[in-house]
Image (tube, rainbow, N blue to C red; front, side, top):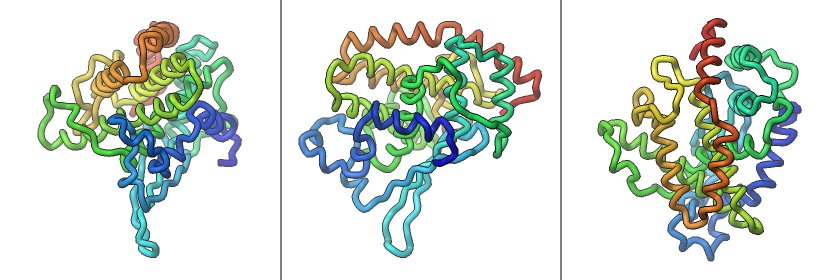
Length: 299
């Protein structure tokens, strides 16, 4: 990107600093020979071989988040995977995090901004993150969303993690695929955190906090007919075959809590972060929805 947005100015460079070698892990997993035997190794060499990855940040109206498009080139007979990252949604992540942190971004200001983000061409002059936002926190949220899309083609299919979930047959395969991508995205980022010198506990806590922020941001733009202010109050699905924030968070926590690289110190650090960032979230979200309703902003 060359538009001077926060994604280009600090988000993508910070992503590389926080999770070094992330794209190398995806593009050439066979180089990690000594690690392929780990049962949690997040990338499959067989699935990545002869495939090409393209990352394209796009200005797309809310509620678009991210998507991966798979195409086979008729000329070279190879597969290309184009991952689209929604700049509007990523900007919303940073602004919501600033609002939750109490940095002076008012409910009314944020509601007006969300109204702009519904437009294919927002009328902003500067979509930079607000002052006081925790950039590592926001970067972790975006990194997880990005890796979720990467996992759809780069990661091995997981075991059925939904045996304890009641789902109709038509939805099970689709929901399982999304949950597998969620978990594998977490594994990718933990793998890259593990590549850095210790201590790693704070980085692991920030990663899980970023996932929690991404889910809460998505919760903000879920259509009114389905939404709950508490992300733990949802049934397993939203609409037909989209796993709900509740199911996503349950399975992500199961993976994070039982991951061999996550120790008790990391778990305690996340508890501190959770209180710092999300205490009062439901109250603030309901006030924000009210302000959006007053402005006829809906999804």
